[in-house]
Length: 141
Ligand SMILES: [Zn+2]
Image (cartoon, helix red, strand yellow):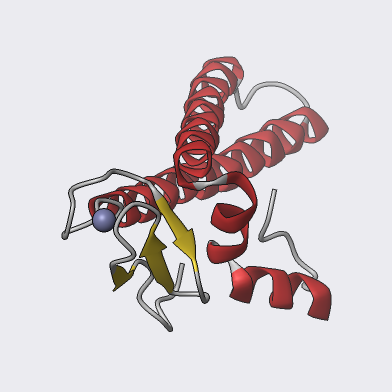
């Protein structure tokens, strides 16, 4: 999982190379598949957090001890934070995958995901050597 503070310099370098590095390593089709799996894992995490919040809310009563009330409030706050983060990541990952997926087809010969990365943004078709820009440079993830 990426994005957890504190950010080391190494992590920043890795992130600035993404997603080109992963695509180069895995190939586009497998990268795309993994992004979908990761995105849905975040979605499920977010969903579980919402269920946990609902369940904790049900238990929440103001008649118990202060310590118990505080514990419930902490659980709800933590679940809300994780849940919101999870759903934001889900949205980010899927929109990125979808955006790159739209550019994964060669316009010259129509081959899907049959390209090789020649830089952090440019790709070359394996079939017809057509080159195009897959990843918009400077686009925040
Ligand atoms: Zn082509």
